[in-house]
Length: 74
Image (cartoon, rainbow, N blue to C red; front, top):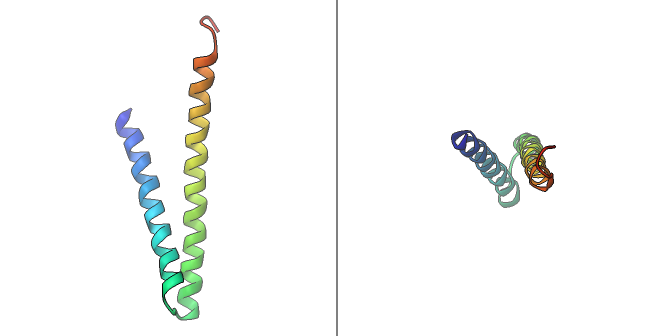
């Protein structure tokens, strides 16, 4: 179970690192238009993936908290 959680965390971390790199490339360099558009598209996809990963993590936390709040026998 912890391996699965670690894999998801690495997945988020790796995705976020790629997103950060794409943003930095857009901010710091004069890029040809086609390259800039490709980086932008890549960044938007990575941002969406990060958001989905975080939404799933938040949902898991809500499930855990709901389970803790329920009295025994339910």
